[in-house]
Length: 190
Image (cartoon, rainbow, N blue to C red):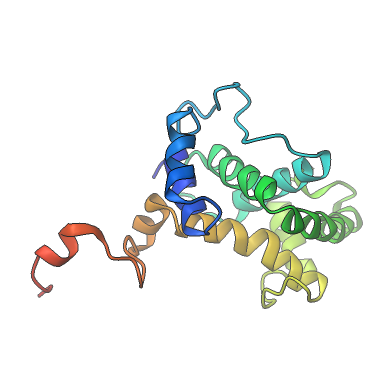
């Protein structure tokens, strides 16, 4: 299943980061181009600080580990979603950057390299050693809980709130989503 820029827009709208009008404007202005590039050719939304760029790279690296192998175009999808979220939510970006320090610290102890520079298998080991695989997500908690919140859960949230990600696990119309006119025009299953 191939993720698209439109999937990123849907996830951003689902997260309350973009309203319908903002998403439509971004789509019209080239944000939703399937080529994976914004109108300026960068592939990113807005100007990000170096700190936010590092967080975005770590989000992409995390997604490469936690996304199902059946999903394609992960980098462009996560960059679209992540860059917009980081630009629109500076407090989130700052807290994620602080959390990245802890993630990189474990990565350097385990493999003598930054998290984003590791192979996916080694990244999975680092996520396990930091405790993100079993921790409860908490933006103010321990390092493991923050890594789980800012990197693991954030990238999974983006995937599963997108139309393509939802179809992957059979939740095209999550609870609370009206599902469009087709959902009430057909009879009950069975």
